[in-house]
Every structure is written in C-alpha cells, then in structure tokens.
Length: 87
Image (cartoon, rainbow, N blue to C red):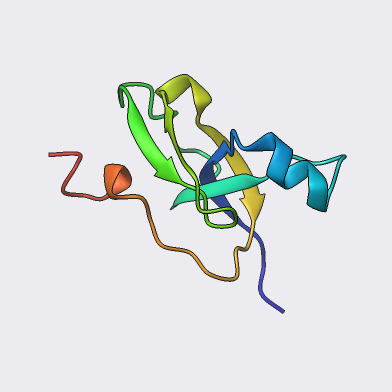
C-alpha cells in the first residue's frame, strides 16, 4: 500500500461545478510534491492554475497555496514549482 505524501495545493475556484459532485468538499488541485518540513512558497506572486478535474483556469497568489496530504492518481507538477522557476 502506498503512503500519502504532502503536496502544495490550491482550492479550485469553480465551486459550482465541484459542489454538484460533492456539496460538502472543495476540490484541491495539486501543484507540486513537498514534505512536511518545507517552508511556504510565499514569494510566488500571481500564477494561473488549470483544474485537473473541471478544466477551468484561474489566477492564484501565494496566499492561496497550502500544504495538503494525499496521493493523487494522476499528477503533473505546476511549472511554477519546477527547479527552473526557482533560479
């Protein structure tokens, strides 16, 4: 059995679509894998994220990013979190 891992995530802003599937939960979009001790990426500025479920793209800021625990079935890291973006 695979263990859960930590991810930087944002909550999809297309709440109407996601509430039709589950009115009690928000949909979290994984951005990058991280670890329990990683510092918050608070200097990212504005960036866009396309939801892996509804396909809509929305703008986010560093304050919208938080650490989530899970194990996404399909996951492509967001380019803003790549090693290239940090240089």
